[in-house]
Amino acid sequence: MKKLRWWIVLVVVVAGGIAGGLYYRANGGKNPDKYRTEVVGRGTVAEVVTATGTISAVTTVQVGSQVSGIVSRLYVDFNSPVKKGELLAELDPTPLQAQVEQRRADVAHANVELRGAELLLRRNERLIADGLVAQADYDGARTAYDAAKTDVDQTSAALRQAMTNLSYAKIFSPIDGVVVARQYDIGQTVAASFQAPTLFTIAEDLTKMQVRADVDQSDIGRVTLGQTARFTVDAFPDENFQGTISQIRLNATQNQNVITYPVIIDVANPDLKLKPTMTADVTIEVAKVQDTLRVPNGALRFRPIVTGATGAAGATGASGGGARGTGGLAGAAASLGKGQRAPRKEQSVYVVGTDGEPKAVPVKIGISDGRFTAIVGGDLKEGDKVIVALATAKVETTGTFPGTTGGRGGR
Image: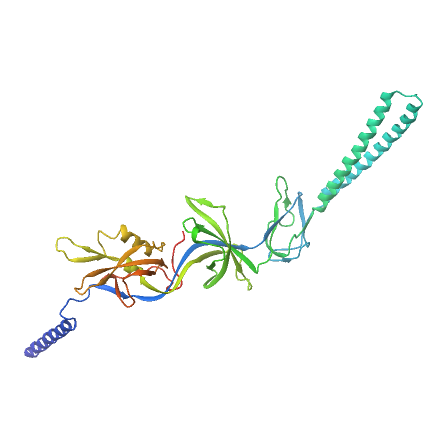
């Protein structure tokens, strides 16, 4: 039994030796590959700007009250469709009606005073013609008549104002639309002092919406009117909505030293999926090239290093360590992994040379989508294998949309 076990061990050792020899011959007597490579190919690269925005109706009107009073009747509620001129609510008209009656009485009193002043003036006109009254008495009668006439005009204007205020007790819709907000209930007091309080908020047409996206100042120069913008909302995370940029407003805002510009995106909403005040994650495609030579961004981040004492080659890259790779060309390449705009200048990628060590290939880079970078010049050819990392390191990929979409950060 013991002899059988020794024979089994001997067979295993011999088999392992034969397998190692075959593997050594298959690799030409060289060490296994030390680097992870990817084949250079052609495809589409799209550079995008990302931002966050808020959805709203194209036209939203806040309906207020110009007079104070108690809400006595409501004819519409949330989500009620309304027509232009439709009665929305009424305030208690009692105090306003009382003001109208008072002003009418003031007008009647002023008219009585006017008639009395007119009679006195006519009498003095006849007497002064016969020389029976002093000029001063005639002038006083004339002044009293003019003053009474002015009082009639003044009280009549006050009456018209009171009647106008009474008409304001009825709140009408200024547009066709849908009531999206109502701030008061029956019995609540509306106080109109320095500004009109808002009773209703009406959206004109919810089939036409707009997104106000805040775009960072570093990206606003590449955003132009007419560009296509895509966005998603949390309510429909698997659905992409599309709109067109209609405005780039100049009223920038500053928040914690971050300056953003509002960009307005017009969106069709025929099925009413989009609701006012939803948050939209916006992607604006600012540049796109098709059927272009492209390399993974990991190839631009990779930089070989020399260990120093032994002279052996190492590397820095997507996850490799090393002292280099943080500045100069390496820093520019590293920025691509963060989705920053690719500088249009020469850089280098590395391929495995005939001696098994990295060999630099100069290239000119174009736009990047966060995962791939377009190659616009240099000695790199389709089908070449570029080094993206050490064979023992995991390749870091940035961006989640290969090819036509990308992950360029806009903020």
